[in-house]
Image (cartoon, rainbow over all chains, first blue to last red; front, top):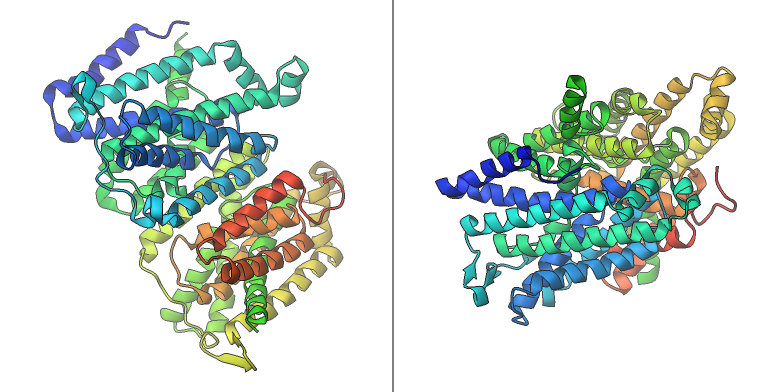
Amino acid sequence: MSFFKPVQALVLGVLLLPLAMGNDYVLHMLTLWALYSLLALSLNIVVGFLGELSFGHAAFFGVGAYTSSLLVMQLHWPMWITPLAAAAMAALLGWLIGYVSLRIVGPQFAILTLGFGAIVLTITNYWVDVTRGPMGLSQIPAFSLPALGLDFSHAIHMYPLALLLLIVVLYGCHVLQHSRQGRAFIATRENRELAAAIGINVFRTKLIGFVVATALAGFTGALYAHYLRVITPDLMSLSYMSAMLIMVVIGGKGSLYGPVLGALLYTFLLEALRSSGAWRMVVFAALLIACVVFLPGGLVSLWRRRQGAIA
Amino acid sequence: MLFLQQLLNGLANGMGYVLIAVGLTLVFGVLRIVNFAHGEFYMLGAYATYYAMALAGLSYLPALLLSTVLVAGLGVLANYFFFAPLQKEHEFTILLSSLGLALLLAHSAEAIFGADPKYLDTPFSDAILDWGNITVTQQRLLIMGVATLLILLVYAFIRYTRMGQMMQATAQHPEGAALTGINTRFVHGYTFALACALAALSGALVGPTTMLFPTVGDWAVLKGFIVVVMGGLGSVTGALLGGLILGVAEALGGSYISMGFKDAIGYAIIIAVLLWRPQGLFNAGAQR
């Protein structure tokens, strides 16, 4: 099963088109979409591959955003390293939280991660000396690589970078899905006892998946912070958490392109419904329920159903 | 004296938590649903009471009863449309469905009621009782009194009535219960409605002690989860002890350690409990 097929090339071509037109608004939306896609893909590793519902994922996104911003603003670290440091910080926290909570499964795991996420949020909110509390951080420097003469302060530069990273991560997920480790994830998700019986170290497998997912969330958080240049502890709140879950579930959990598609729908439908105020989240909640009840495979499964009907 | 005052505040808040948690624990015990939307029924109970007083001109207690009945009816519908069709599905699917329902109710409430805070004014909110240096509002006394009475009623209901015993049977073994002629679908609907009624009642009682926002359901369900995890999922007596412990721990922690981290105390408790005794503090043996 190859990763790059004509269809993908076509889609990529279409995605690059707005660059030529140079419409700032469209490019901004597309950049947000690419960043949300990365975030949704990271959650998909936990929800789709490991089959556990984590309610603490937004916390890692926020930790990444704060780590990178603070390293640049307070300690003046160079920017080529801070997103990586953010990923490392999120991964460390992910390892710690995963190590203690992955022994517990099902609804209890969801509640436990909810608790951890809420504690990280509380600390961010009240550690005012460092995080400026509910005020958040503003005037975060835009992402740039002065050594290479590159500056990503505008969407027209940030979008290609985010898109490139998205392709890299998608390829990474593709390799992971078809690797021994990826098959171990799926086996663990489908049947814990059986997976253990054929020699898979279930706990270790889950921990690896969880740490990878949190590292990616942290990395994405850093990019997000340097792109929007303003962050508040809201990044770690339940509203971001539900947005992420909506993207993953509506798009199709456990699939490669589902989260990307979900992020696309979320970004653009949210914008299209902006005038309807609070009702737009009602629309998303209804979509979420409809998908859970009628379309458990998400939107990508429609494509597969169609193909199945033709073949 | 400060200690006694905080202890009393903690017990009053704790009884409020108990009321929220009892419904949550019943739904988990009988339907096997971890219901993220439970807090939204609390929110709806509080708002229904507010509007029954503001628009229909009812006084507090009739408004409270009306909203309880309304929300119980809504619970029957919610179970019929969102949970009953998923009965045979994986717990993951049901969890997501309840999350979807929570988002649906919270955001609909925001769209309909508006995001600005409301204040549910009751005749008991401003009346204060004094004993020496200890003061308490009548509203808090009402919460404690009603909650105590309801817990006793729920306990007796489950233990001694036919319906309660049918609930127990369904909780222990759904297929076995169905085999003996129990209509488990009816029992599920009944339990869900009862849980929603309890949530609405707690909203109508506890709501007046704070400002009302459409997002108050998040707060309620989180407190409910903390209590239920502490007491053991599915246990009513566990919910009672868990709620009181949480209320007192928050009141004492809030006054002696830091107000800001008051909410974090609850999370720290669930993390400790889930890691140390995942079956809850008060469950001696392994559960079903």
